[in-house]
Image (tube, rainbow, N blue to C red):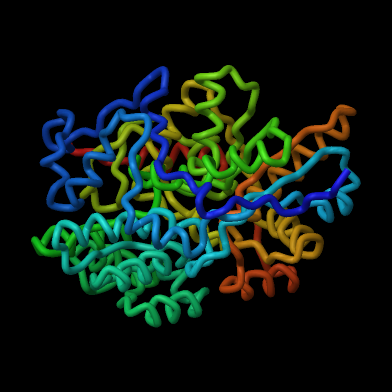
Length: 453
């Protein structure tokens, strides 16, 4: 039998629609609330921050939403992305299981983030927006949005979490190359940033703080909108191009996964690969597990509380029903900066609550160990975030071998780690600390949640 390592699709086979999981969820997510009135918000409440087309997608229950032609044209410069059968990794493990990975690092940003950056910039352009503000953790999202905004003729201001700004200067320079302005967060540019710095001049920052800063700037100018790279429903929607391609590719391979895996920060890359497969489970009875892996230092899914909370530190967002560690929580300085977020997306939170997906937490060093093993076997240096998905895949293969069964495992390799080489240097120097939040620390973090009224 022919040994097929790379499963590709032609440009003509690229999906022309995004898939909306809200159409098929047995329990719809609870609505976002106005923090002052505690009443459900309407589209107009978000109009100061987002273009109306994205707001419509945020609340839509349509199963499929057409991808605009201009977005498809840019997608076609790097999509469809390949799926690889990880033969060398399987051999290194000595496993009987089959391991596949969908590689999202082959575009200008080096990660899956381009899948939503392009449509978000496009819809803002269609509304005549001149400037966008956003935040970025590790820099993948900022890089993706920088090029997309430049392509569509929009200025971009990026608040980059300070610890990552210092750890990853290459990402800042890439964003500058794509004509974006990058500011370390917390900054003195905003009231939200100045408040944080007054309390802690050496604050490492967090995604929650950076979101507050970006939103504050956007709200003050009618020609500026805000953009978010994960968490929100429309972001998850755009990322489903990944899973829809993967369904076609696995069919071409004559195979079907027993488990689909993604790392977890706010939920975008996991949702992107998992939601189309969850559709097959919900509508067609496919027997498939969906597993997401988060850091032990930021364990909102495995130890957090399901409740209404703010998406940012200053309390500028609507209240969202989600698993959270508290909007004031500052995660440890792990190198997977994209996973350092206090809350989980509304859709993933509801699906986890209902038992349709599984979550697991892992230590930083174990994940880097998995990433190095993967790089040596498969030749791709994974982003620190992606190493969590790799570690989850290795767990599944090893468990299957112990049980004497063979599984088909598919994970999303959400991006490459070329800008994260300093993190690997620390790993090789044995200078990469592990940190696990205790239940007491989680309780203390959640107790600090302060919601007016």
